[in-house]
Structures are given as structure tokens and as C-alpha cells.
Length: 122
Image 1 (cartoon, rainbow, N blue to C red):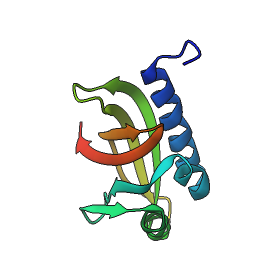
Image 2 (image 1 turned 180 degrees about the vertical axis):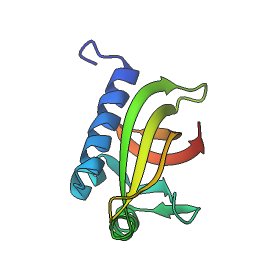
Image 3 (image 1 turned 90 degrees about the horizontal axis):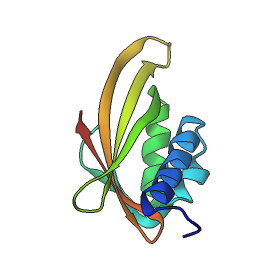
């Protein structure tokens, strides 16, 4: 692994995903995901599955709100998933603050790609 630990490789993958999400570069984020990814739907609940569903979800989300997510800590859990502590700031399209909070994003990474993302309150 070129001297990198598995958690460093996973952290690099997720750091790229957050940067691309914040830049609204959907294609770059999708390239880091399994084709049948399960992605938590933070707006309506449940999950969206697959690249097209994630693209549609984010496109819809960004037409309503302006989210920014900044990872602050990466930590493996006992089941091999990666827990990311995230500072999440969501503004309306008018620039008004909707919320500013810490959340946890929990990732399952399979074969070097994001397989599933869950959300829980910090």
C-alpha cells in the first residue's frame, strides 16, 4: 500500500469526495462511488441507490439549499466503517443560515470505492 495505512487511503478518498461535493462537481464524487452506492437522503429520509439517483438527489437538493460539509475528524469503527465528524453549514439560496451543526457521516468502503453512507447526529 505504498506505506499508507488503510485508514489513510480511506481518508484521502473521502477528503476528495467532500472537496468535490463542495465544488458541486458531481461527476468527480460519483467516480469515487460504487455503481450501486447506497446514499443517505438527509432531506427526506431513506436512501437513494446508484449513481443516477445520487445525481438526481443532489441536483434537487442544490436547487433548494446550499450545503457545505467540512470533515473535521476521521475514525474507523469496530465494524471497519469510517466515521467522519462533519461540520455542516446549510444556507438557503438567499444566503440565510438554515443550520450550522456537527453530524457524523458513516461510510462503508468496498474495493476502494464508497459503497454506503449513513448519517447520524453527533
